[in-house]
Image 1 (cartoon, one colour):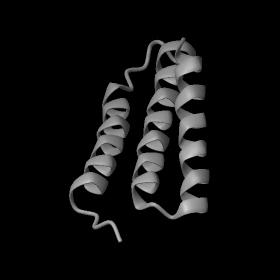
Image 2 (cartoon, helix red, strand yellow; image 1 turned 180 degrees about the horizontal axis):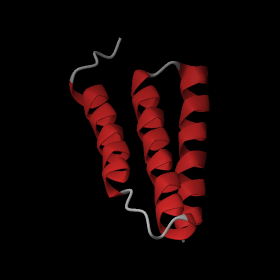
Image 3 (cartoon, one colour; image 1 turned 30 degrees about the vertical axis):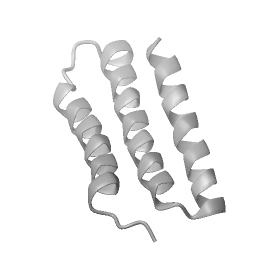
Image 4 (tube, one colour; image 1 turned 135 degrees about the vertical axis):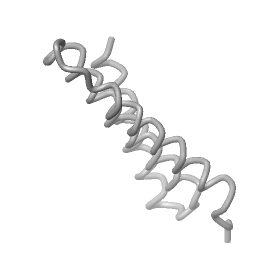
Length: 82
């Protein structure tokens, strides 16, 4: 399940990034960056839960998820759409 979440968020980031390159709609850029950070979060979850179960990587996981949400909020609130 952890790997499926990683793959899904990474594919979403790639598709949003590709769509941004075609249309240059800035909201797609912020969404792609958000899903990229969430994919990194899911990668850390896989490492934390599967590969290194004795190591606590909770702070790193929360940092990646907070960064993704903050990037999306920045795009929604402060980035002017041309």
